[in-house]
Length: 175
Image 1: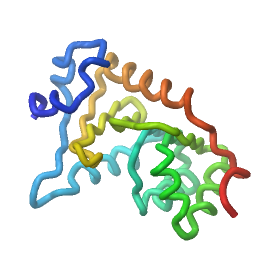
Image 2: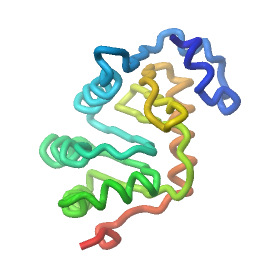
Image 3: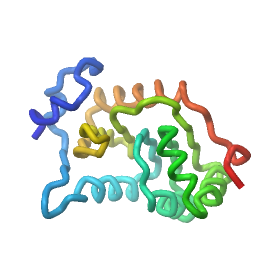
Image 4: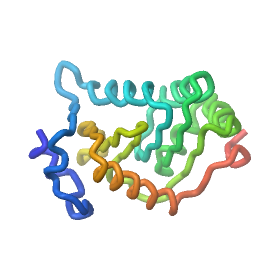
């Protein structure tokens, strides 16, 4: 499976040998379980005390689940979201109110990135996650590892996006 993923990973941006993924767990959507990767991501998120993510996609049920993890569960989160995904999420009924509650809790930080996000990333405590996108910008798989070199690279990638993103404040949200 990793050989197949090499064609969609940003190898030219990786300053490490792809063989470092040797211990990685790869979860891919395959019939009949086409949501295996999404369920694995949800499991990792639910088990983490801190989550940080970068995404280009909109998930309608993500905000209520995030509220549950952060407000009720005490998790801290940082999210860097593409402008298109952020706008799609925030336009949903009740989403601005949930986002405002999350931001006001002091346990959630949201950034809006005005640019292309060609690959998704997450850090769930010590676990680094890479979500390669296919040509339609759908998550192709979930690659997870605790390899420190890959984790540092994922963190640096997210730092770069965050530096160019706009911090969302409660006042910036629609009423």
